[in-house]
Structures are given as structure tokens and as C-alpha cells.
Image 1: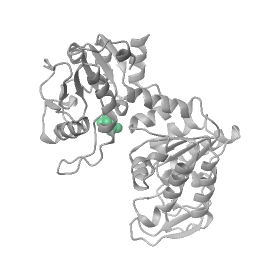
Image 2 (image 1 turned 60 degrees about the vertical axis):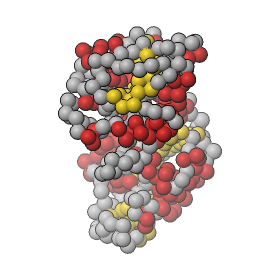
Image 3 (image 1 turned 90 degrees about the horizontal axis):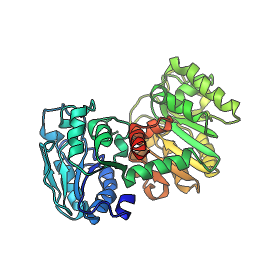
Image 4 (image 1 turned 180 degrees about the vertical axis):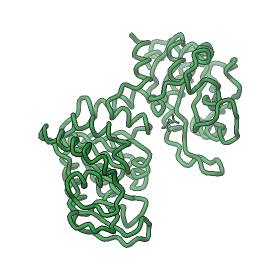
Length: 390
Ligand code: 3PG
């Protein structure tokens, strides 16, 4: 945006790395296009400023050098053209050179088909850098990867900068975590403590309430001495859960443990749902959601929050009978006057299911990248762009 204001974009070859890695069904139809829509402002900005625009992204995890039709960005090119209201030509075999005129945009085929992309090969990165005058990193979803089209190119391009999406994502996260309006409440849910332990540990140093849900809550219930029957949990991580609870308590902060739960005897949509106090979970029970009393308590805490960070559903919300906990929490976030930020695939699915997109302060396009920022890591994208700006 600064470069546009300074008039340094007109007539320039601008290479935009976006994250257009979107889900598709078996027939190759895009099932969810948020990331494509989120890439449009950057592309429009460059086009309106008179640049010759090249855009690329990875799609999935293809084998380098082996093109299969399912790896193609062709469906993305079509959707992008609809959104931009202008043709978007898809170019293959583009590393050696790209013909593109000022005011034109082309999409460069799946960059992970290029040999050396994943391992950030220097020769490849230099070739990519040679294609452009300005490199714009706007792929927040891929900001945690150091690959040739995200990292190496940023080191060698004549000019390298962040695009508006990358900037907006990090601003939103900083608003939530670096300068939060308190109380700061984080929801970390999902099936396993092991995949989110470093997030729980990092947040335990900062947040005022750490709400756990899903299988993660089951392990915390074990740590609190509660029975969990046959529920999904990681008993070997009970000491780690206890340490998180202790770290929070030492700061006068809390990890609320469910007081009631919804159980079933089978993991199935038609399993009979039974609400019971947390202390009364039977040996053959599966905990599949938080109970109504717990959900109401959490909703009250979310109402009083100044800032909310949300990652993960509270229960198996795909099954109607076990979806109420997630729905109550989602609606409480939507109704809260707190600044809220949400990210992660399941969380976005819950937001879509309850139609609360407009009521969440910021919805991240990052999956793994969002989680790594919550861990407190400096992502490769910000590290290299910071070095270029210095
Ligand atoms: C994502 O979907 O999280 C990003 O596009 C990154 O994809 P990757 O995990 O294959 O690098």
C-alpha cells in the first residue's frame, strides 16, 4: 500500500505470493473460497496502480516435478476471474520467464510443482526473484513456511514487502495478544493436547481465562481428578496439563474445568445424548460435548471479556446432539462486545454453521500459521520481510 501511494508500482512487474490453497470436492469444485476472496484486495491494488501482475500459490502437497491434473490451480483461476471481473490466464512452466503486460494479471501454476520449492532451493528462489521488480508476500496461511516462493524470493527480489492481508492478519493478532483489552480470554479446543501444548503453555503466560474444550478438556478433567470413562484423552500429558493449570493459578488466572458434560455410549451422530455432572461420568461413557451449565458459565465469562481468541470447537459439533456447547460458545462470542479473533479449519466451519461471520472481529485465513503465531513464534514471512525493511 505504501508503494502504491508513493507511485512506485506503475509499469512494474509485481509478483504476489498468495495462499489460494482451498478445499475442493472429488469433482474438483471449490467447496470454500474464503482464501481466494481474501487475495482480491492485494491483486486489485496492484492492477489499479498499473502493475503487470503475477500471482502464484501452492495447492495441496504435490510431488515436485510431477504434474497431476488434481494439482492444477485451474479451478482457482476460474474463481479468481469471477471475483476480479476480468480474465485470469493460467500459465504453466513459468519459472524461465513470464510475459505479462501492465494492467494484466496472470496466475502461475501451483508453485509446489517447481523442483526445490519446498526446501527453499537458492537457485530456484533467484529465478523467481528475477521474474519481478517487486515481490509481495500476501500468503498469511503459508507465512509459517520457508519455501522458495515465500522466503527465498523475499531475500533476492529487488523490493520485497507485505501485502494487505498479511499486514491485517498480524495487526489483528497483535491487537488480541500484544495489547489486549482485558480480560483476555482464550479458547483452545480440539482433539489433542499434544498438538496444542505449546500454544497452551504460551497463552498460560498471558491470558486471564484459558478455556479448554474437546479432547483437550478431557485430559484437563483427568488432571483435575475427574472420571472421563472411555473418552478421548492423553493420560501421559496429565502432568503437562497440571503444569498449565498451575502456571495460570500462579498468575491469579484460571482454567475453567467443565462442571457438566454431554455423553454418549458410541461416537455416532445418532448416539443417545445424556447430560450429567462431570463427577458422574461412567466407565463406558464418551464425553462428546460440554454440558449446558458449563456452556452457560463460559458464555457469561465471554460476555465480560475485553478480548477473545478462539481456536477449536467445544465438542463434536458435526453431530447435532453434541453441538450445543459449541453453538452456545459461538453465539456468546458473536454477542460479546469484546474484540474477537478466530482461526483454524474447524473453528471456521463452526462460524459458518452458525452464520456469525459478521459478528467475529477478525477471522484468520491461517490454519497452521495462526496456531504458530499463538505459540508466540516469529514466522519466517515476518522475519525475512523485517530484515528486508531494516
Ligand atoms: C494451510 O492450508 O494451512 C496452508 O496453505 C499451508 O499448507 P501446508 O501445510 O501444506 O504448507
